[in-house]
Length: 165
Image (tube, rainbow, N blue to C red):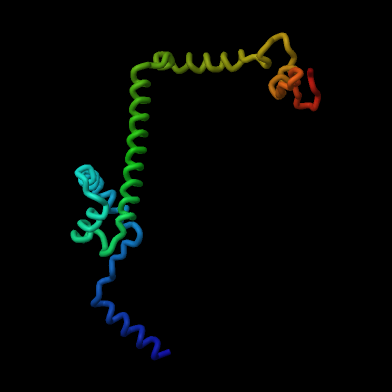
């Protein structure tokens, strides 16, 4: 046990003077694509390949040595798709907000009590059946049945197992 504790203390003493390595793992390319997105996009527009870009980022110390240009390209394309999706969502939210601002709802000018009374009245006035002439069972049968067109005519299958020809 003493040998183990002594070795452990020596390892700790040696590592006190060392700085831990900063391993970025698999996020190196995606981080680079996020940080330098505009730059990469402009360089690609000027005609530079991802192989050249990867080499330049390696020389600048942004990417580790012998980085895979394919991984940088994938990360760039994922970032471009993410930004396009974000742009579409922002545009949809802005359009919705503009439509709501342009068309004030009629309820906005009504007092709250009047809105509540109209809502309660409309809920009480809802008919049990869509047609006053049909009974509840017939209405349910119409809602749950399926109509099949055979070559000889239409057959209606009801949910209770019966058929109508």
